Image 1 (cartoon, rainbow, N blue to C red):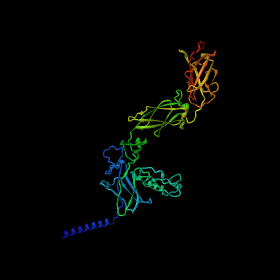
Image 2: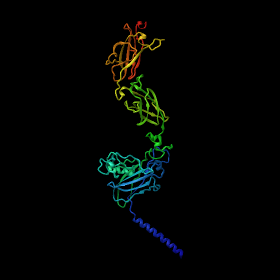
Image 3: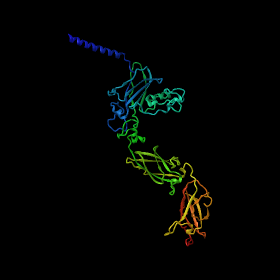
Image 4: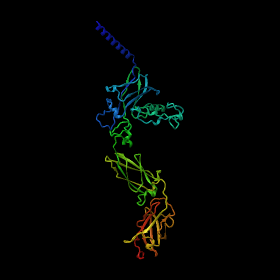
Length: 477
């Protein structure tokens, strides 16, 4: 009898519990929507366990490989007011079931916008605050941060709708304040990288299962994981430091430059045009400057395999690195062995490449070529030369008539001293032709067949061989 009573009590208790559960379920409001999402796997991921992008995400490893820790869901009504919001792990337990979904709140009938965004473990999303999120005036607290005008954290005085604290809500709030549509044809328009969105209509007493959302994997240099498994994460990885992907191989190639100035003038150097150093960038990233030296110069820098652009600017050597030349751009590539191609990059700073015209006096000196077995140098008195004639030529060999004596082609006394022009012409390419005569007026020595190249700010030496057809009297003294 007692056993029957105990059994009756148990059945009665169970019935009561079931009744309560049924009553509770009957009173529960119908949820307005249900969602599911997946994270796109990285295209650079090697393992074969990566899930296709057109199937449900069924493993938390997809989230961990992408670096997405959590997901935030925000729902806005037609007046851009928050109607629902919740956070979930990137891979909720419900997703282990095929078709498992997360239900949202019960909403009033109407049209809504839903934004879903992936976040890091610290709750911050990936993205850049969109340019359209700036309010045009400071008449009120348009970014709803409690500060107005010059008191706002935007230091230019505008009450800017900043992506406050870089939170998901900060990005959304900025878009609302700027009047920017948050979801544009199914594309997130709020500046978030790992984001998806939709617009939908709520009907009374109906749960709408929305299409699956797809979150892009965050930038691999900001995801907090070691994507290429080299022990270096994000900005500690050389690939990220160079602005390429974390998985891109980075080598340390030797870059060879062949430097010349003034259209390849072999007797000119960087100092003749005032350039002391070369300012370098590769793909827009600054590289340590190097000294400007004529000929071959080499340097090494970490670079990824592939194509690159080198820019070179001649700067002063005083430490201020003031630009003195135009920017020269050269393309090159690095192969998987770390070898740059072309092997040598040729750079010439001609007179037209200088930002300011180079004006300097013409100056030179001359000597006479000794005969075989003689020691030099030889000067006027050594060879019996009494008079000389100078002509300044351009690189095409044409005489320049704008110079005054002694560079106007008239005869002058032969002298071992340096010859300096009265004028300071604008420099391009100049040569000097020198002819020397004896006391009888015979042309005895001349470099007319190979005029000497000149350089600004430095005297070059012209060597005068015997003139072709010179009489014997030139050499009998």
